[in-house]
Image 1 (cartoon, one colour):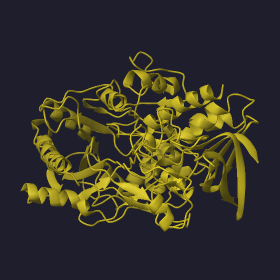
Image 2 (image 1 turned 180 degrees about the horizontal axis):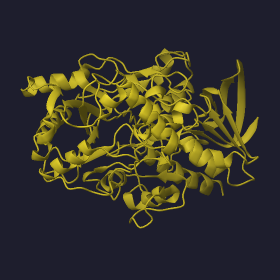
Image 3 (image 1 turned 90 degrees about the vertical axis):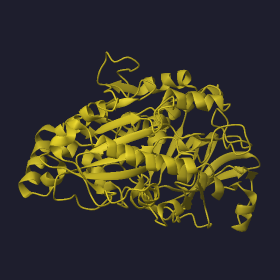
Image 4 (image 1 turned 180 degrees about the vertical axis):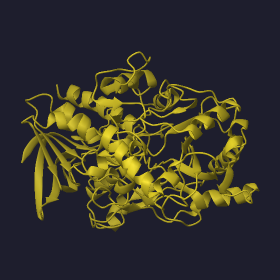
Length: 530
C-alpha cells in the first residue's frame, strides 16, 4: 500500500487532517485508527460520556503512575479510542484559551503561533450559534451551540459571583476568558458534535481517502533520517504502508511520544535499555507533560433542583428519557459542566489562572452513583500549572501503555494555588444570593481548615480533567521535538499534529485548540508540498 500521506490516529486532529489533506483529489491519504467507528449510541447522547469513559469500546483504559502529590493515588486516564478520539468522549466545552497563551508560545521562539496568528484557524472551521458575536464565524464544520437546559441554582451561583467582583460574560473566547457564564458546547440539536461528524464524514465519499479502523500502529518505519511508512496490525495481520510525502502522528499526547520511542526516536539510553535501535536522538520525546488538575468541592444544598434527586427517582429517569427522546433537551443533553468561572488566585495576575466548573450534581468520587440528596459540585483547577511530568515506554510490547507520571502539585506555587482555590470556592459559597440554598460543605469538609490540611485533602479529592499536552513540544531548544511547522527535528517526512506539540498548556479546555493546530498544520503541509 502506497499513499502520499499517512495519518496515525483518527482522533480530534486526525479527522481534521484527513479532510483537509484529501481535498485535493490528486493526493492519496491513509488514516489509521486503532479503535472502532464512533457509531455507538453513548457517543452521541451528551450524557453518554459517563458510559464511554472507562469503557474499552471507546477508551484506551490508561492509568497514571502513583502520584506523590495525590497522596500516592493512581488515576484513571481516559483517552478516546475510536474515530473522533477524545472529541467523542470529552465534555464538549468550546474553549480557545487566552490570547496570552499563544503570545507566550510566540515569545518562546515559536513564530507564527501568537494569538493573531492562530485566531484565523479557530475561525476557519467554526460554526457559531450567534452570527453577530464578534470574533466568531459561521458556516464552518465545528458546531458551537448554546446548552439546551437551565438550572436555577447555577444562575444563583452566577449572582453570588457578582458579589465578589466576578462579572458575567457572554463569551469565554474573546481572548481573556475572564468572568462567569454558561459554557458553549460542541453539539448540534442536543447531540454531540465530534470531529468524525464534522470533518471525516464529509470526506469519506472521496476516493482518495482511505480510512482503516482497528488498525493498531506498531511503529513508524525510518530509513536513514527519513520516515518512509508505518507498520501496523489489523485483523491479526502485520501490514506496512508507504508514505511518498509524509507520515503524520496525530495519536495524542500519550500515544504520539510512545510511537516515536517505539520507532527509535527519543532518549538513546532509554531506548537502548529496551533493546530498541536508535534512529535519532531527541531527548524531549515524552517530556514536558502538563495537565489540568481539578479539585472537586461538593456542597449539599436545600430547596434547589439538581440532577441528583432526579436521577434517583424512577419517575425522574422516565421524564428525562422522554424529554430527550422528544426534544433532545433536558439532562441527557448535558455537558459534564454547565457553568464556568474564570478568575484569579492572586489579584496581581494579568489574566485568570483559575477555571471553575460548577455542576448541579455530586458524587463521592468520579464514576460513583449520584448522591440521593440535592447538591452541587464546585470544581476548580489551576489553568497554568508549573508541575511538569513525563510519559515513556518501559517495554517493547506495543500493547502496553507507557508509564505516565504527571507530578501533580510538585511545585510550591501549584500547592499554594491549590490551597487558595479551595478557600476561594468556600468564599463563593458564602454569597448572600446563595443563602436560600444553605450550602453545606461536604468535600473537603468544614473540619479541614489549616493550609496543611487543605493541601492534604486536595491530594485526596483532586483529579484530572483529561488535558494532557506538551510531550512532543514545539520549539528550538534542546527539549523541543518539533519545529514551528511541526516537523520532527532531524527526521524528514515526519510531523506531529496534536496536543503534544503545545510548549505550554492553554488556559482552558484543549479540544478546540487541537482543531486549530490541525487546521494550521494542514495548511503548512500542503504549502510545503508545492
